[in-house]
Picture: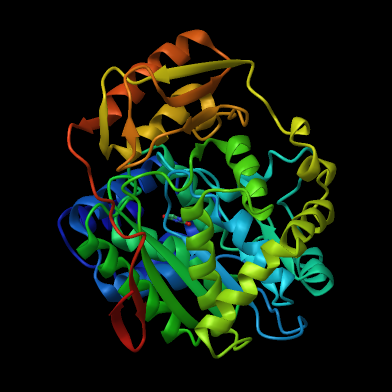
Length: 441
Ligand code: URA
């Protein structure tokens, strides 16, 4: 078999066989197929798509490219959650500790920033000393001991996705249903949780811009998860504006900590509770939705989720003191306010552009080898429907390079549209998709 022929087959709209897909993924993981050929293949998939059968085979080839984690030595049913990627999406930092504080094991594998979106692994590295490179033994030990572990893919879990994810990030080949579904589900299947909750974002800050595409992606992932014997549910949630206010690694960590203290944005907490509810139902910790919601809110009120975050940070080598003292987190040296030019109401936010603003400030990778600046980003002060007066602060940029900040400011201002009349907001949670079908939330 030759990679050249597989690229050609896909470029011409053909469907690859199971053997061809496994060959390609194994050889790429082993370093025998170079990045440039895989980039060409990914771009061909972007334009020509993959069949459902190809997507399942790609998922399985990537899941089996490394260790398939056996979590049977962890007591009880394990829960996991994954987002398809958004702007300001720091949900895992809030949700993980909340669910773990209720005694439910959270065994999660996360990714780095992708395209204009951020990644949980980068965010967690804002805690000085924090390590996401856990061995399988350490991962299991932590989940058994404190009920939560979040790892990157260094523990030989889905290494094919690790390589492909980094490649797609810098080759404009992220937003394709088959590539996203196989990327997410390969990690979820390899990391062995019993209940999987998928947060599928839709809107101008998501990879799936339309609800129809988001629903199609969700259905494909639910089908793959259910087919592999995992209890899988997908929630379709709004990404027509950033989640919460902060966008940028350490800034998002601070907002997540505030949320666990009960002082965070309402939309962030609401979505964490919805996703958490389905995690708790998925592992049968509760059968009643209202009881699950109440239990999750209680972890904020009684401080147990915040305490769990401290334990989690410490267990992965980070400084837990940074949860109590945010001055220990990375901090940018320059702060620049962006003021409204006119009175009105926020009508529309080009959310992916807000992600790009954070990238321009240094929060994302230009190439696979780039280092990122964890301290930079933007904190928006006005969201859709909010009234704004001329001269009021719409956002605050945090950066370390004035030239980049001027560029980011220009891009930011073009991302906001104002209206003279009041504007209504979209619902945050739209659809729930399971093997039983699709229902309106
Ligand atoms: N999250 C992932 O893990 N992979 C994708 O392709 C998109 C979001």
